[in-house]
Length: 373
Image 1 (cartoon, rainbow, N blue to C red):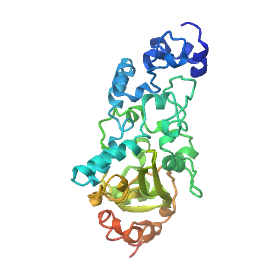
Image 2: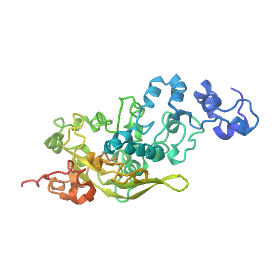
Image 3: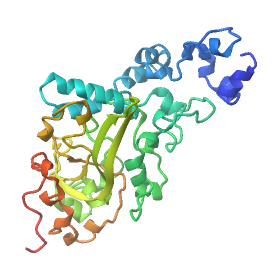
Image 4: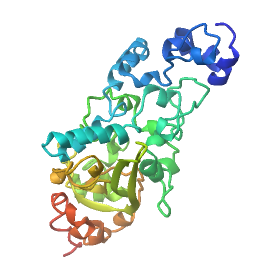
């Protein structure tokens, strides 16, 4: 490999990439990023340059897939790569009119793709949603610091919960007691979409699952009375998570110059238990933690009339897995911390009038009675 030219030092930042990173042994800058070889003029040299070649599925297959075939094949259909998870959810709320789907496609292109990522945005740079920028001098690393990658997209809720940034709410015990980064629980196979095709976040079995690391607390396998008494009625988070962030009414539009922007109501810290809206063999629980999502009938009104004509198809209080796990919580310190405590359970008083129908199936008809009653 010849010595670095001056321009290479500017953009690559140091010689470690050239001398140590195996990617520099198999491809030149132009082979991945494009441009004009041998040009003396900077503008000419940069003609056709692609900042993030791994944003293109075909390029992922051609370049990344040469050595990482299984990962590359799965990644381009994963929830991280594009916005099809939004499609799965929002499409259920759309009306039948073609205009509704056209409006959603336009809004999706303008507002709903910036937080979806690429190979490079996890392994080389920060996500574009937080401004991008090389992390380690263009070196490819299997695991970059999660505070520079994962939390670029999963920051306002997951990171704030996990690291204790919500005032008065403790950080997750996995962080405070063990300093565990995201990839200690979320495997590379899961993050790359290699564990099976998903149409939305909670498809399939829970991954990771609490019992993966704590098998001895499973129902009937341990000495924790509360676990054995409640059986599969409760998701773990019902007893072991605390207040989490709920968001409301994200209205999207563009300004006179065509620049997309959104307006959202202030987030609210809540802890609400409700009936499981995604009950299945993999998620058999009767009660789960619910979190409000930023949706209302007029979210996409800028792009068309009655775009969400089927708004009531899904609840606005959704199944949630907060990242603020605690061994001891207010609701599990005593039986009556939960039983008979109406404030913990979702009810009609927590809803806006337009949400009543959408959430009727997640509001418990009868609360667990106080012990002894």
